[in-house]
Length: 427
Image (cartoon, rainbow, N blue to C red; front, side, top):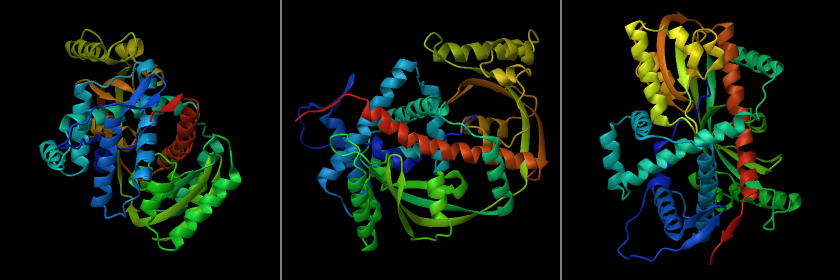
């Protein structure tokens, strides 16, 4: 199962907050995006939120033009992905949303109510924050559906990365990296490599002269995380795009590398922090599950109710877990084995599934729960403590390669849907 990057409280807050003003303005359409519109109030809300986040991070404030441009591009990409979600029938109900918000609060070491108070005390709306989290989950599913089919991992790549992991031993290093992308296209949508190279070189010179990297990202970057100052979060080198990983070998905190040429433009990277990661003895689980995937003809609520019925049938002895998995599970690979999954470290699963198999008592069938893949019931059959085995190295290599290729393809895909969309900016 695909492990999706966790939603980060501070980043999502940029999207979610709505700033109250004493003056009430008449709203208007600012941008037309295919079948949807972006209102002036949406732009102003995102700009105000980004401005407050920048102040909290003590980053020099970019110009109003730069903020408006980045906010507009952020909202354009969001509208395009939400339109795709509508066509694909992707929905996130309140139960799953509550589960996701609880996970975000847990990752920030606070109860949900405390997180709510913190958000509201900053001037944001809790209701709008919830809806923005819902949108983030929906867009994550759209991205996974669109990009997964573009990723191919060869056996040779797995073998190479497996050997690299072995050579690192029990100690590896994670990097926190910030990123600026100078896109290849000019304002008319034509490729202009010379112009992009010149702009990238100028940005690099500004970083060398001491200009703030985060402010330059907000001002200049074409990447989706520009409003966050280009922050890519923590990652080992092996999980980064190959271009980035090769360039960051041997770097240390504060180093800036680039410009690095790719198919979509020129990249400039800064190592903002580094940390070591210890690897301990791992617990593996052997579980089985039944997956029901909602669709246009199968609602979210109906999928959840089907699994409730299956659970009751299994407990009552009317049907076996294996029979129901073979007949109904959308995970065709495990369905042929009565729903059984191979021995695995819980971390290889998406967060909701991971947390269930970690906490569920042996031989107890869970209540239905939702992940990005759909609705599940799961039963943990066995647990064992394992050293890092050859198979674990291979699984880790597969995960790292997937994350790396996903990150590479995501930027390309976002630029493609942006280029193919009808966008009209209104005065």
